[in-house]
Length: 168
Image 1 (tube, rainbow, N blue to C red):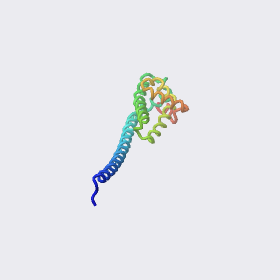
Image 2: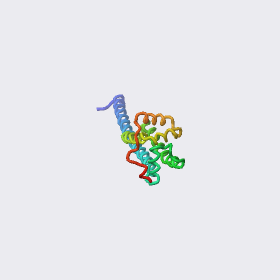
Image 3: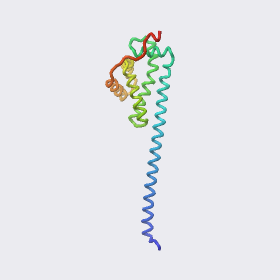
Image 4: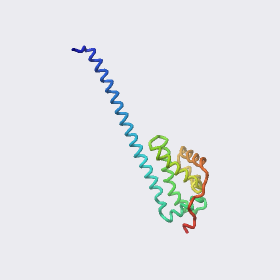
């Protein structure tokens, strides 16, 4: 049986259409896999940056400044305010990047939700709120609004488990 040229063209058109659909499905799967891989990488990088930012708290002298600052940032001597700011600036900058990445869907939302709760706990202590009020202009408007919402949604608490006599 011979196919007419017209019939062969129609069969080729159907096969070609099917091939395009299969190709688009494959490309879609590849894009999805790439997106997940990029979210994973971005999440790892930002969490690593956060861990690096807080690692200086391990120093005994620095933990004492941290304890005093979270209790009352305003009453610190100027040198200790600067040291506390050196710690908190990269912490806040990392949280700012995490927030923007979340808004754009470039990080894992499950990891971000845990970090949000951690950030809310950081913002619940009086000294951190005082620090924020003194340094808020260092950060973008969108992040300032976000931090203000975090503060408004939480009740202030006293820093738990730390006493100044631990550092004397």
